[in-house]
Length: 254
Image (cartoon, rainbow, N blue to C red):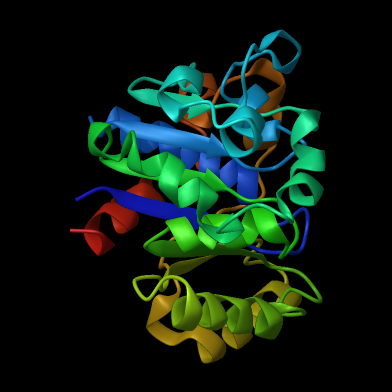
């Protein structure tokens, strides 16, 4: 069975892309065959895995709008055993172009079906919104990981996210569920961060991963080199945290 996991939070700057890129990289290191789908028009996952956004012939936009097969778009990334279906700013117009499409919520799911059997994991990096692109990601996935930053307002908007997941589950994809919640930008020294953790634990219970992702300079530097943290500095705190998170994800998807 292929595990299709969407990384979702409509808030920006919560560590979605960092989590998606490094989860893919560590899954690849553990000899899992992985496909990353960059569904965020900003394309940070694309550049974070070593792909030049200005030099791509086809992207996920072409898959969704022009019906180009995903197998023709997926390419090797800078991470071992990880392919990527890249994106660029063209994707920003996709939501408008897909509004009148037949079965518009199912387009990504149908595209994935062509390549699904080639991968152990397919990770989808979603945009910071609950629009049509994210609905496509939720419809295609069988699990959701929600990154939450250990800061004030962290839980703001989560009710809307959970409601959206429940609507998709009821109407479009009965298989979907929350695989886990991961605390990012975590600084256990501050009282605020500890308070946020308590609130998240109260809200999500056993869905919260035991691993939290610390604030880490090396983790912040890695994307500018087009490398995941395991390739940039495998001994850093950020690398060790994402390795531990990956082990938890594998255990939850057995």
